Every structure is written in structure tokens, then in C-alpha cells.
Image (cartoon, rainbow, N blue to C red; front, side):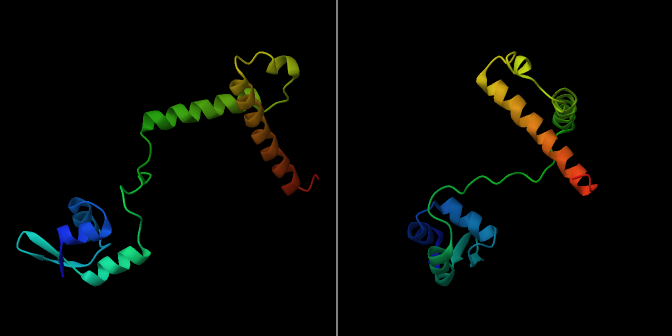
Length: 126
């Protein structure tokens, strides 16, 4: 059994990270009073198969976006579909304020065009 300090040194992480890995079940150990003792075997397994040293990557939250954000996203989608799902012309693209905006218009219009094509194929039109 190793102390959290010894496990942290071997894994090249902080003691706080070792305690978090114990709490998450990524390391095996026993709590004795206020201290943790970490299984040497679980430390070795982590070194062989676990993540690299350093701060763990942020995980995306499974929580749904707030209703305000979702409503705004719905509005943006509906507006983009209404404006960009038809045919566009070179003069229309010339109105873009930047190359990035022009590319956004083209890619968005292409998305709606591809969706329409898939619908027509599914209906046997093609």
C-alpha cells in the first residue's frame, strides 16, 4: 500500500488528483482515518494503461443547454433555413461582409441542399 503522496509521485500527478481518482474508482485503496492508502497494483495498472500525467481533459457536460440558449439556437436555425435553403446567386454572395461569412452561407446552403437531395432519393425521385 502507498500513501497518496507516494502514489502521486509515481503517477506524476498531485495528491489531490490521486484522491479524486480514488473517489472516481480509477485507483483502488482504503481510507484509514483521514488518510488514504493506495493499492500499489492499481498504481502500476494506471501507469501501464491509464492517462498521461497532467490535468485531465475537460469533459463535455451532459446537461442540456439553458432554455435561452436553445431558443436562440432554434431561432438561428429557422432563420438560416428560411434564408439559405433556396438557390443563391453570385450577386447574393457578393453581399457577404467577409470571406468567412460567405463560406458560412455556402456551407449552410449546401447542408440544406444535401438534406433535400436525401429526401428525394428516399422518395425514389432519383
